[in-house]
Image 1 (cartoon, rainbow, N blue to C red):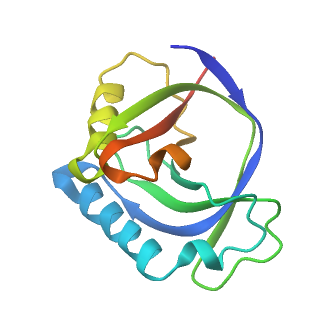
Image 2 (cartoon, rainbow, N blue to C red):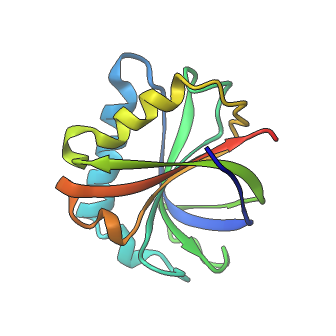
Length: 153
């Protein structure tokens, strides 16, 4: 596992407060994705850098077993205009460990990667962790998603 710096970035998108307990996060995050796709949120985000979709986990009440916020959106050049019903956040430069999740998104490939990450002994920062759904994630049955986990260096 290689550590890398991710520079400061801004995100605009939609969010939900959830918890991993009793399958609640799977339900809430699934509904968030459904809303993102069915309401064409991608096309409504102003100042997008590109169409890469980011799924962020932030505002942790402790660790991954406690409540946190999931934000689904895109990197933007600025937070000057945040549409009604959306949120905008800025995240400072930080150190991350990058994981690659490969497989069928419809069968929980990314979730399975997170289960493995939760079992690691990383010194996690619990500030913001995120998944990147770029070009290699276009085919959901044979996708590749990058997962960035913030660490205390």
